[in-house]
View (tube, rainbow over the protein chains, first blue to last red):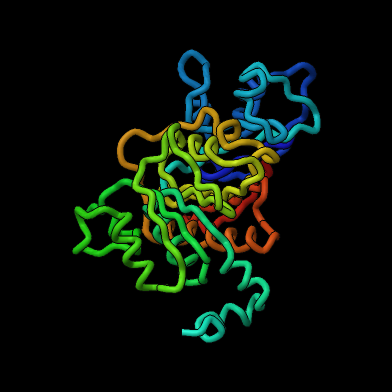
Length: 93
Length: 223
């Protein structure tokens, strides 16, 4: 299973903090995202991806605590046991 | 006023030894907006030995909903000067040094700091602040937006750097919505974490506390 966590405004939007998804062999974050949206009642991919399917700045995506921008971005593979966190952090002070 | 009288309420809570640790601490507060105004007051009231204050902005009317150091008569005046005056009135026994500067890549961190508090309002300055720190320095980060906020402690060289963790973060265009209650709540939690770091017992080292005041939700994100 893959552990999914939503924080801050995404948690509020989706009314869900955590869920588990069965893992799929050789799946990437790009492939995981639509499968994740199917599991949820509220569309949210428009918050993460532009019309070309590329990441929109604003939400950090961590796999096992590492930002995917420092891994292989959307092509980062996801494995069983991984924790994938979606966090749109506050910016103001 | 003798310290034994002035601080006796908090000494009853944490003891003489920890009070001495607080009075020996040297802390840099970067940003004197909503978070910095609360953090600086709480650290000054607790008797932190020396505070460095860094900011370059003027007090403006929209600041007054949450920046507890300033009043109507301060509008148009430098935050740094007004903050220093207010904090010296709150506690004349501590040492306050001001650095009137916007934090950018040229910023040099003072050599004698115990830890740094990130009360800034943008990620570019946060990354520049982090870059300026000596190795092993603790940094307590906080940020707010709407009724959401986060607090996190890192130790430079040991923790995942902010610039890596928050890569891809967007600085919102225009004015960021902020409420007074959220700024003071997150600022208070940051001050609490500062004391825990001084005591050698940080609660949020590599562990981000994420708060939603709208539905009063607290969660933790391990980083």
